[in-house]
Amino acid sequence: MASLCRIPRRLLSLARFSTLSDPFTTFLAAKSAVESEPDPEKLAHIFHHQSSNFARFRRHRPLYQLSCRRLSRSGRLDLVERLIDHQKTLPHPRTEGFWIRLIMLYSTSGMVDHALRTFHQMVQDRVQLTEKSLCAILTVYLDNDLIDQLHTVFNTMPSEIGVSPGTKSYSLVLKAFCQQKDMESARKLLHKMENPDIGSYNVLLEAYSENGDGVEFDEILKEIKNKGLEHDCTTYNHRILRFCKNKESVRAKKLLDEMVAKGVKPNSASYNMIIHGFCKVGDFESAQKVLGRMLADGYVAPCSISYITLFQHMVKEGEFDSALNMCKEIIRRKWVPPFEAMDGLVKGLVEISKVEAAKEVVEKMKKRLKGNAADSWKTHEAALPL
Image (cartoon, rainbow, N blue to C red; front, side, top):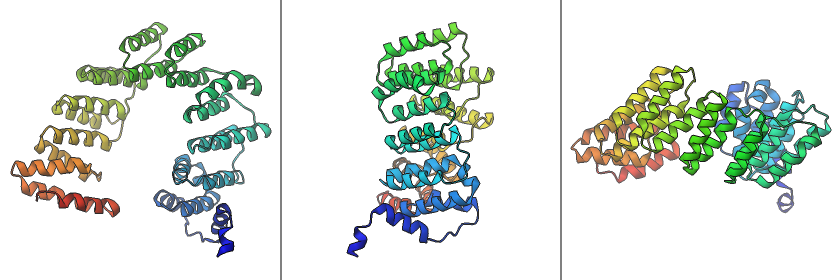
């Protein structure tokens, strides 16, 4: 036993990888196992073998991101390195895109040094580099809050690797300046750019929105108009959010109408911000109309946040009958309402003498929950006045 304790954890992991059996015969079974496996060692084992067995597994980028994120959060950076190193031995075309994918997996795991070493390995392999590689390295520094290094790299790397920075690279530097709250430098850089696109302007709109600087926000909108740039969904969403923050949800809804009329496809945030805006001022009728509009438009699938936002605000404002209907719909769609809001609903229903309705919704909740969530709900249920 004493000798085993001296064996590095990485080598023990390799031993487990080589001795565990492989029970999966389909990609979907392997995918499901990875998504549901809580143990880092077992997750890494499944991933290691299935990425070798299934080409479809290797093409499924969200599964890579999920696995590396969960392993890094578990403190198992050794397993992250093991999995990514293993990818280099598999039959991937060793293109620029392949290397960038590995770089970004290391980046999202917080392994900056590994990401940079992978970049240098790509250079040594004499891969034809484009602006995508420059953007990847800038993103590594940006996502890991290494802003000073980002500016240094932007000033030196393009000439070193023979790549000219374009709009996407400049937009990442804009984000860095905004993250530093150096809006003067961000504006100067924007005006130096030869062809800033709507994405570049969206970066500044987001920063001014977060800072609450309405004057500069409007100035950027004027520049967009003067440049003849068309709003995209992100531009509209920043404007919608500003109206909702100012309790002008009616104007926000008109923007939604405008973007649809102009052929700009809304995303779930477009609707959810307006729903939340109406809820904040207690206008649940209008909020529900926007929810109905989202379902009717068909641009996005119904998402739990829309219903839960309405449910929480209805409970908070004492609209218990409406909250009860919303709660039933949430459970029917197999989502889980927040326990705190459920407590408020049940207590509210009891206060208005609707004890049976309260009991019914509690029973529905119990049937919906499993595992630790079910155990937690029992604690909440015990304190309810039923």
